[in-house]
Amino acid sequence: QVQFVESGGGLVQPGGSLSVSCAASGYIFSLYTMGWYRQAPGKQRELVADVTSGGLPNYVDSVKGRFTISRDNAKNTVYLQMNSLKPEDTAVYFCNTLPAGIIREGYWGQGTQVTVSS
Image (cartoon, rainbow, N blue to C red; front, side, top):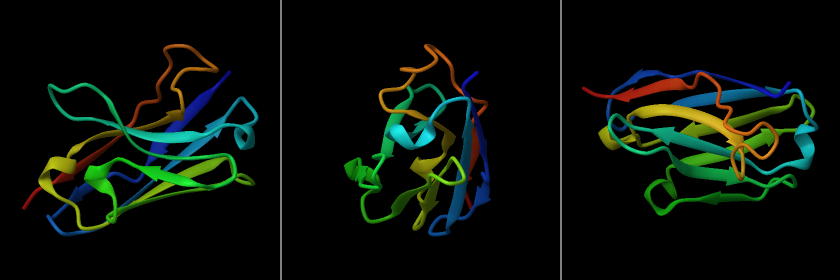
């Protein structure tokens, strides 16, 4: 059974940094591109970054230069380092495959809350 367990969120001031992690299980992690997604209150979930099975990252324009995605295939874990955080980065952050749900349709983990506020 595919499972994603996100952790590491919290409250941070604008301009601060935070790192979130996602432990994946139930499938061959190393074969799939992984993505970090976020959902702000009242908004649709959006992809913010992804990393291919070989470790090549991609970012949406709004986080380029501030966020860094990485993965450790030996630990079945994907990471997101977030620097220079802005209030508009406030959201629940989720990981999933890219495209999402290709292994377990409709499934999302519990996510981790990131709040950027002074």
